[in-house]
Length: 407
Image (cartoon, rainbow, N blue to C red):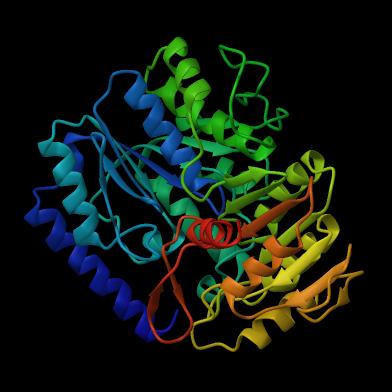
């Protein structure tokens, strides 16, 4: 670890200590559930909150899409998953003052490494998965895993997905009497699975990955003593969060906005859309600049396996050239023919349109009946960074404005 990064981490630790002291360690008055993982954090955290709320608990959730405290929404700012130490303690203090008994906190590897959640003891820690992401920061996968697992040093109960290469390390580090494992197919002897949940799972969510998220939330709720009927009722009524498999148009063809921005998340959402699409699957995406370069070819490879049309575009390029980012993605794309934006191709066509608005409009203009357009990478976010700071942006608004102006 570089001297500068160590210095920054100590600064965060110092701030966390001050913030915790100023707000009198509000987390000590709350049952705190921390959720970490490469993918699925936001859906799982908000589902846990929904179960708590529907079981009669006064609760709060602080996640990528914002904070909700006893039903009131708070904007945590642009591109924020785990806020600063002062913001975290502020929200927990608001929750305490409002009489909340439980709080769900989405916890990133950056937050763990930078000590942003210092001073918070977690009643339950949750791990959804660990796939290849953020290696620009952590340098290698093992360091990324080690950082994620720090959460469980401060968790009384650990709820962990056993379906992954990280699990043998979990067994070594987490005492068995504190571990609750889950998986779809019973990878570990004592896993919570679809077969031994106390109810038959009925949900509006799509995909096996969301069934895993549901199992994680169910395991947490059971550990907290919430009755099965309340869990069942909450799962049946839960709606996807903003920017997660969000359908913004469904007439003649469907348009979905999703936050997927890793190869693993592509491998989760794209096959589900492929199964549900009788026409073409048109995919608009890019990759963030100044972030993990290694994942880009893997994203291209996953997309080329499922998509019919790929439109590469910007996704917060920051100071990095969009052409370089897309070149990295193209290293993994196989079987596609590059076309100019003025050419229409029925299938296996690759377009490069740097302007995200123009890329989305191209996808919408070429869509036919029974096609599906999926726009990934931005999801809930309300800003984009082209290298000159944050600019107001919304994938959903761009789609809606297109139909408003072209119907």
